[in-house]
Amino acid sequence: EIFEAVEEVKKQQQQTYQAWLDLKQFWQGKSLLITAGPTYENIDPVRFIGNRSSGKMGFSIAEAAAKAGAKVTLITGPVQLAVSDQVKRINVRSAEQMFTAVQAHYSNADCFISAAAVADFRVADIAEQKIKKQSDTDEMTLTLVKNPDIVAWVAQQDDKPYVVGFAAETQNLIEYAKDKLQRKNLDMICANQVGETLGFEQSENALTLITSEQELELSLATKDELAVQLLKFISAQ
Amino acid sequence: EIFEAVEEVKKQQQQTYQAWLDLKQFWQGKSLLITAGPTYENIDPVRFIGNRSSGKMGFSIAEAAAKAGAKVTLITGPVQLAVSDQVKRINVRSAEQMFTAVQAHYSNADCFISAAAVADFRVADIAEQKIKKQSDTDEMTLTLVKNPDIVAWVAQQDDKPYVVGFAAETQNLIEYAKDKLQRKNLDMICANQVGETLGFEQSENALTLITSEQELELSLATKDELAVQLLKFISAQ
Image 1 (tube, rainbow over the protein chains, first blue to last red):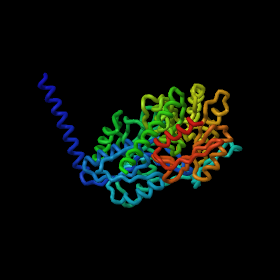
Image 2: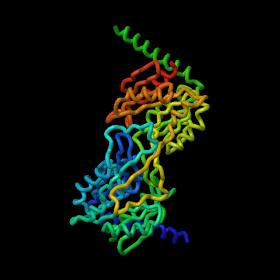
Image 3: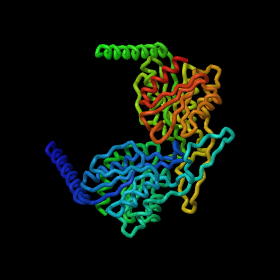
Image 4: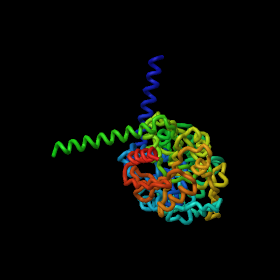
């Protein structure tokens, strides 16, 4: 019995090792462009509209892909995260800055993963000086205009790479994700349930990977583990 | 000459040591309540309005006061900072949460320092689910309502402690600060120039300390150094 158990562990180790070799074989020398983190949209020099994305999912994918031998360019919004030297990191703040960086880099990429939580809207008129509170007004109105849709733009290009999007939702997740996949012409989408203990600002996450033909539910795991599974899923497409 | 230089250094060391003893004598056993960091005002479960305050100035003051023997309670918005165990730390997110915490603690304090960058406005109606982008709308309006004025509220109480405010401005700094001192009935205000290389998100800062009778300009220094000078200034009032 002990002998059988040892054999079983050995077999599992060999399988894990073989899976890693397969992953390396696919990603070695491939070029991955990935966005991560939130974008911050300035209201004035001190105030902004942000979102709760920590950037962890995108950073985990970038790191795992670099380990597997890919040439990784990571375009990130404001986050408190470090990344190894093998990853080429580009820091941006707003959606428009992220868009400019993606436009400059997408055409060399074999795969584009849009893991950033890009703000849908930005402030119409950014104030050059700090907006002063008027003692006679109890209300204030902020007019917002639509930001460029970065992942949809990439997916529309003739020389588009393999395009992977993310859908982070608090409700009707799979339905929204499938609609987004089709509407934006993506090759794949990662559906990401956002709640009190899942998704944003967490180290663990649960993802469902969706293409027009497949749907793979990955159960709760660390973002590092999910990153490897996601890269494996892409390599199998 | 060498002898004179040595004597000079000795004298300076003695003065520094004496100044530290004086500071300790004043703050020993005193109770300090201090707020720090930004507040984040939720738009929906994933989006919020924030500001660039790093919390460093408030944390430096809290740490320096605790070292000088004060009992320090630090109420802080979302920041990436640690504080030593001698400081009692209370984490909050929104201005309303910060207000509730201040109301619960101000009456035991000998001194209240409002170093937090409290949002002047919050979103009128916080969405319970993530707001979906409508493909047919290019604009969105966000209605904001005034937040409670925490430092003004404390300064209005009969049993108010010694109240110190901050004014962070991009222009007309001293003028705004003096107006705020008087209008909000503060005992002292720290005028804080905010710009590309000063104030928010920086380790160095320049402050002007203002009371109804005095004005002391502190030149560019680390926030730790400014914290000690600020505590010294308060002890001399």
